Structures are given as C-alpha cells and as structure tokens.
Length: 376
Image (cartoon, rainbow, N blue to C red; front, side):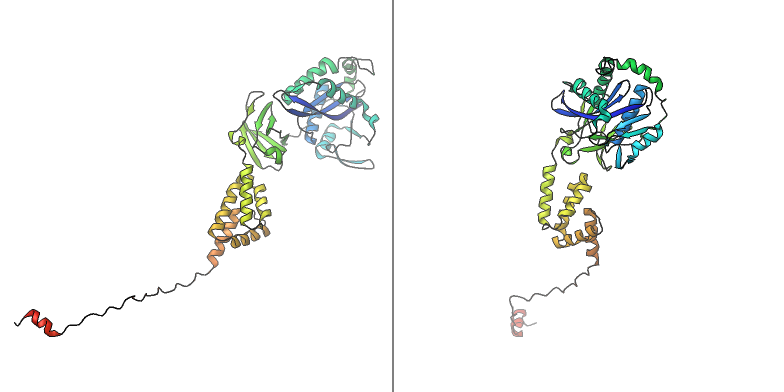
C-alpha cells in the first residue's frame, strides 16, 4: 500500500461544441494497489512543466505522496538513459528531489511494467471522453473530477473485484504527507494555436493574427494586470488582449481578421527582384526577426533604392550582413555615412553664351545733327 503510482499519457480527438475538432491530451494516474485513479486533460501536448503541475494536482487529490512513480522513457521525464543511468529533465528532477520520490523508468516494449495505467488510459479515453463535446479545458477537467467520483473510483474493479475508493481509504494511511513544494512559478504557460488562429485561456478563446497557426503553432502566454500577453516561445511579442471575466467567449481583434501575409509576400518578392535576387536571405531575416515591422522595413529599403541606387544599397546590405545588423535603418546609416565621405565635385563656371545675331549701329555725320539743331 502507498508504494507505487503509475503514470501514462493518451490522446483523443473530440468534436467541438461550435464545430471542428480538438485533440485532447490526457495524463492518467493510478495507484497500483487500490487502483484509485486520477486524470488531467488539456488541449495541447504535455511539457515537463505541465507534467509537474499535474503531479502536484494528483498528490493533492489523493492527499499524499507515494514512494515510487512509474513512467515510460518519455522526453518530458528523462533527457537520456544509458544502461540505467538516467538524466531527468530539470523540472522533473526538481520535483523528484523535493518530494523524495523513487522513479522507475520502464524499458522499451515492456507493457507488463505499467499495465495497470495503460488500462486506465484506455478507460479515460474510451469511457469518459467517448462521445463528449469539447468546450474548454477547465470544463473538461471539472467534468472529469465528477466522473472519477461517480464512476471510475466507485465501481467494482474488474480484476480486484473491489471498489477502488474503499481500498484507497485503507491505502491512504500509507501515503507520505504532502510537502510544501514550490511549483514552477513564473514559468511561461505554453499553448498550441488552434486552426482558427485562437488560443485557449481560462475557458475563453483569444485571437492571434491570421496565419499564426501556419508559422507559429506553439506560443507562450503571460497574464499580468488584467492583460493577456501572447508571445512566441522565444519571448517575442505577438499580440495582447484584455482578459475577459466570462466563459466560453471569443475575444477577437479586428486587425487579426485581415490576411496581411499575401500582400507582404508580394512586397518581399518585388523588393527581391529590384535587388537582383542578391538579398533574399537578408530580407527573410528581417521578416522573421521584425515580423511586426517588416512592411515598414521593406518600404524604407525601396525608398533607399530610389534615393541612392541599387548597387549602393546592395553594398550596404553586404556590410550589414557581415556585421549581423538586420535592419533597414542600418542600411540608411551606412549610405548616409558614405555619402558624407565622398568629395563634392568642383563647381564649373557658367559659360557665357555668345550672341546669336551681330548688330551694327548706324553712324551719322555731324552735319545731320547740325541741320536738325539749326544755327544758334
């Protein structure tokens, strides 16, 4: 009693309440002696942080900690295994040391080592999730807790012929007390972008720019001061929303409904042609690193091509690439600096144009003026 807790993962596609489908990922836990069960469900693949959080939830649900946990050689649990020498992931190793757990890693093709939890996974996916509509993760997990108390842990087990909840009442005394574990605080919450370019958070759907699903399927979300910040896994800002207090709502920005990728693709293609195809890598790097300002960057490069010349711009791009300066503003600085260094050509004198016609003034003799003036 209280010796072993087996853990395994499963997945199943569910129909959405508003159309479409969502893949649900399940983490199943079962005590080997009493067959007492627990499960966590979410709409994105499990990471090491998610597994640690689910383990803490399981310990609280059962009111204690077992001596040993059994896992497959999963990448979110162990980094490497060499003849029994196991290197756990950072998050899981921290959990193991804090809770003083003994970890048993199953060998490959060894279903007997954790046959109990494999049956539990099939039970969760084939009984609880069967013919169920998906609305949100929180709703699904609340329903799962009700199912555990109503069905999974109170019906007679097919092998032991006993009720898991009744056996667990005896086994609970053999579990070790809960310890004050500092769960992974401050860790980014990872989410998978859905095909409709939305992200689930607190039972609501928040939109991301159109086309994000095709280029950035995994994102991180941070909640701070009532604002939900959606970022790439590298911490680059994607968008933000004010957190809604409702449930089952779609929070969408109007700017996210417009497809800006096609026009940006065309602009990049035209600029690449203008630069004779010699700056494709540079343009793509700008688009990747400065995705929010790629349009402005491309416009500035085109303006510089008109103001200077293509050869000068290409020379500046080579300089920027060599120094890893990926911005149109560095190109502009380079061109302006070189323009100041070049000596101004000497001013040529303005040529005096020769008269087209030669005019000869008529000359009169003095006696003509004497006749006009008279004798005085």
